[in-house]
Length: 315
Ligand SMILES: [Zn+2]
Image: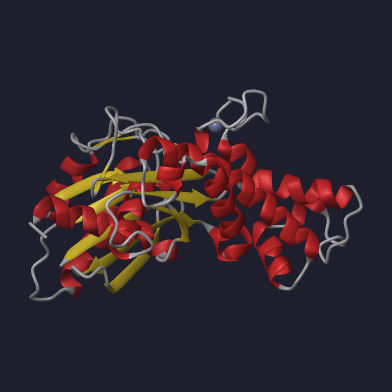
């Protein structure tokens, strides 16, 4: 058995995971980032120890840790990332191994979510896939020939910052036309607000622009709201256009879409597949399917455990 840890800005989630990817026991405690590096490391160590204890006589072979931000995977060091001030250069692997006495591996959380979906979720059974997670940011991870692709600085997979328009809207990263600026939460909500401002009828018309969430749009679409359906169709169309670039580049079999808005299912995935089928090269689109992620919020945790399995056993 293995331990997976999902380190977030708000919570530390940990789980005891078996080789089938089943979470047998879960812990969830506040991260308390404001307490400083040592405090958070101790809390992570507490979660690991308590999971080791829960496992009883079953030996724990290692733990994987998913962290937001930039990670030096081979050296086990955290670099900059949002929500973790003062963490630049912290040797997480060394510090945790010292505290808990079991082998530790770390990686970027989006990479590990991709690994989780690849091993146990929407990407099961293929050799190449991309996970795209739609949220405030648009993150992702790449699996090529059955393995996570990190790139030379462990920074690969920034799918949200591949641009689809040189003169497009400005992204949070400062560039123009990034996929994230179109299909991230802000892009989706802007699309809805523009339609409402233009007088499109919707059950969301009564709500002030700021209070509408992507989930509201998904629910309105499910209830038959034509404007919400159109917003998701346009979002899926642009998403598929961006994904066609990735498919042309990597010739993968699956593009697994996660994040809250993916729950809108075919309202967004069908137009994404249609756009990919229209835009990608024939030989590429023939094999490439856009599917929904299956592991939800557990993808990062399960993927973290999977990274430990790969690193510390021959599974
Ligand atoms: Zn960007």
